[in-house]
Structure formats: structure tokens, C-alpha cells
Image (cartoon, rainbow, N blue to C red; front, top):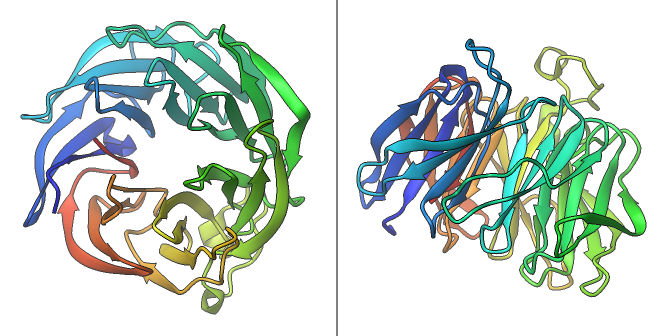
Amino acid sequence: MSSSLVLVANAGDSSISTFRVTDAGLDRLSVTEGTTGCSNFAVDAERGFVYASVKADDDNADAGILTLSLDRETGVLTPQSRVSLPGGAMNYLSLTRDGSVLLGAAYSGGYGIVCVVGAGGEVSAPAAEVRFPRLHSVMASADGRHSYFVSLETDLVAQFSLESDLSLTPLDPPTADAPAGSGPRHLAFSDDQQTVYVLTEFTGEVLRYHRDPSSGALALVDSTPAHDPSEKLRHSVIDEDPRKNRYVWGADIHLTDGVVWASERTASTLAALPIDADGSLAAPAGFVVTETQPRGFAVNGDRTLLVAAGEQSTAVSLYRIDGTDLHLQGRYETGRGANWVRFA
């Protein structure tokens, strides 16, 4: 196994665990506390910074983005700076343009942001904002020219040109529709950047969009179910309890070589959807039951390892990836409410 680090947000403990990947599995190096309600973060491994979304705290500080420096030997995260976000905490953060720009999406606040990141990791106040109900994720294209904000409530992906001054110019058309009531949530780009896959929360499907590499515009092509039919889960209803009602509850999505992986929280599964040569998806090749309520998981850089966290578990699972199969290497204690994972 490659020598790398894995970071896990434990929202229930307001902490982030740092693990080292070893030949034996995962070795927990440290647990950094004080990341109030942190449920997501972005990692700049090259410069050694972690950008964590934090909620308002007992000292009446606003929600914000906390910059922490990462010590790769000890795993300790040290706070460096913080930018306040009076509109509410981010549910998703991602970096673009070699770590010089940070994008964010806020579910409760219904707004998305673009921020400058300074040489010392300091995050500016938002340079641009957009507003859509219940935004759940945002990512930029690999070249940093286009950005995509996913609105779960209004079933769309808002698409923009990210200008040199970091303003956002809507593309033509300004949005790409998702099926009504599907609840698009998280997205992932194909390696050639010509396909965008979006996992839906309410229907548990992976939507496939063709992406024009020049204009950046998305066009919905088709969809493929990513939840286990034997579980007989029902279509979710917004603001109703998915587990109590046995609703589909899609969460996170990532790619490995030739496979789209998607998590579903009610049945606590990871689905493996093979990618065909044209970018279309075959039906899931299988489902792996993982940590309970897997909101977040991550794949390492060489696509050989996957780590999954569960909101109703205090452990993470480490898997070795073999095509569409996952081989459990071990389970490791992390903390309460574990819900976000990134390799560093």
C-alpha cells in the first residue's frame, strides 16, 4: 500500500482524525479537536493546508472556513486563519486553479461562494456568490474554466464560466436539468472531462451528462440506478426521515478506473457501476455493505484504496479495490458522526 494520509471529519465530536496508510492498514496519528460541527473539508496536499467548514460556536463566532496546516509526520492540524460566513456553513468545499481558489456550497443557507486563497492558505471573503435552494456540492473543471453548483431542491446543476477575476458568468444555458424530484447531490468528472456523473439523493441514480469541453455546457443523457433493488427502497420525499420510511438516500460518488462508485445510506451500501467505452454506465456489478449510513467516502490517488465513513458508526472501513470488487482490509476507530473522508 502507498504511504499517504487519510483525513476523516467526525461531525459528532467536532474533530478531524488523521490516519497514515501502512502495509498493515490504517494507523491513527492524531485527532484534532475544535472544528465545530465540521462535516466537510478540502485538502491541498501539495502546500499542506486543510480548509474545513465549521459551524457557529459557543463563543458566538459565525460559521466559517478554518484554514489548518497539516504536519505530515504527526498528523496534527494547526489552525492558521478563519474567514467568517454569516450566511451559514458550507456543506461542500473544493479547490481549483492549483489551490488558489476555493469553491463552496451551502445547503441550509442556499448559497455558493468563490474565494481567493492566499499564499499562506488564508481564505478571502467571498469574491462571488450565487443563490439556489439547498445547494449540496460544487466542483470546477480540471482546467478551472467552468464551475458547477448542484441544487438538490430545484433539481438542477447551475453552470458558470469562472472568470479571471473570479466572477461567475452563467453558461448558455445557465442550468442543466435533472429529473423532477430526483434530488441531485454530488458530482464527479470523467477522466477526459467530457462526462459529468451526478448522484441523486432521492432516487439513488447516477445521472450522466455530456460536457462540451469548449463551452462547458452540460446535457443530460441518461441515468442508471445505483441502489440495491433487493432492499425495495422507496422514492424519497424531501424533509421526511429516509431511514424510518425506508427511502432511497443517495450520498457520495467517486470514480476509479472504469468504475463509478456510489453510496446509499438507508441500506448502507457502496455500489460499483462499470463504465462502458462511450461513458455510459452498466447496471451495478455489486453492492458492498459498509459503515452504517455512509455519507462520505474517498479513493486514493492511484485508485487502489477506498475508505468509507458512516454517520451512525464510529469507525471507518479500508478496502483494497479490485475492479468492481472491494476487499476489506480492516476497520478503524475514528469518532462520532464520521461523515467526510479525503486522502492527503
